[in-house]
Length: 506
Image (cartoon, rainbow, N blue to C red; front, side, top):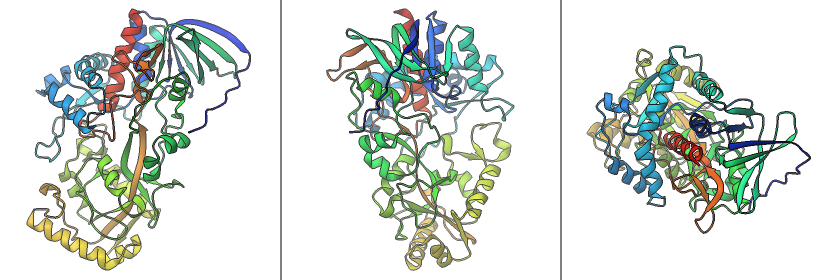
């Protein structure tokens, strides 16, 4: 088992009384703190970083006013059962019901805040209706005309929190939970001056520290398969399992299925395999359904599946990486692939409609950097490309010939790839890049009930302790339902709003 961190608590220099302590200033923590404060609770928000972390851009919800304005109607029971089916029902359906029933109201509340402060909202409506796996029009996003001000959404929420009396304490990590008899009574934290302080919370402590994706020791212990399948760790350095560890130390129970969200967008040098040392570079086109071959030069899967599924398929192949192969028609192909959510690539002139997506100009620049750095390879013949990618030339040539033949016929008899995404590799120069998994976040967390109360091994609530976001569990298992875009952030915000209201009413 991963080692418990030994925290030698020094002298407590100060004791602070409040009603609610929220540990973590990210997507879930901000919404929790703000909602509780709006409902007249006295709130302290602890964040161990220098600033609150900007909330996620893509937010999944159903039943919002924005969806109604666009004529989008999503059957509540159908999407709930699809999300449950995606997990083989190893979830608490009551939590998914809660997201379905309350995400629309949360979205309306958030839209009002953002639009009142000059932000605009978009909804992804042009989903594909002819896919083998259903896509959903759940993805809401905010943007402002000044695209350089990336922190504007979090600034708006920070100012609103302060206006409602939230005491935001940055560079102040939660060290451990405190208990009084059978109830969590508060936390001990280390403030920005290096002093230990005790914060007593009469209504409750909410864990929102973001999961454990940047704690390799925990990842190897809890999800060794994911640890061996990835080629990079996320950029969120502070996500090290603090909340989960603190809760487990007082008897909290975790999900039985360790689950992560992995992007298929991390390039590695030819010959490299998954696992440590992590030396990847972001390849944003990794989620595009180009021809994929393994290290033996063989096609091995349907390339037109969600990005987690691509990682799972590659985990069964040599080195747990693959090569994406495409030709000089790639720009046209990417637009016609019509992926949704964060993998969508748009023309520069369409950035007003899809402001949160990378446009083709940005992608061309990134591809150029990958070529220059030796990640992406370019060649005038397939044989030359194979050599640069360290693949068997004849095997690769045979597999590309077969793939092109299937593209011409318009039917993938080998792997069942949907026909409109069958694009031949025929126009030189040809391109190839070795790709692996980029770990975005962990999705298994502490077991909770519908009021976000953390549960013990007997599924009984631990009094005074709550969890939201990636510290909480019961909602995902095995994989991430990518084709309901934004549902992770939508779950985090919806549950943050729910528990904020719940705590304020105690």
